[in-house]
Length: 108
Image (cartoon, rainbow, N blue to C red; front, side, top):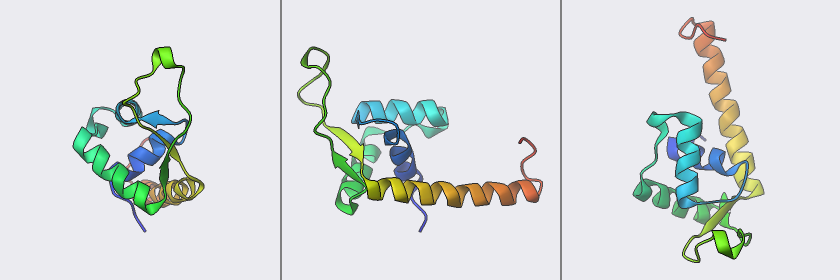
């Protein structure tokens, strides 16, 4: 099963820590550059699908109240979500290896 790019970006952004929506968008852009920017509507539709699938869950962990906003929802990667993300990373690694073997990529 291959994921939508936005789903993989969200799983990847959550693989290091729990995050709220805006932080997920920032981390996705940091990891993937400007072409990996996620629009808010796209993010929240993806989060909704991923919550239903059990890949992410709302997190009970929150930062200290003086640096937090009550309106924020925090999300965490579930064990299933981590397995899904790892499987997608492996699939993508195989494709990159094939691209290198076929001389489509020249950098190591």
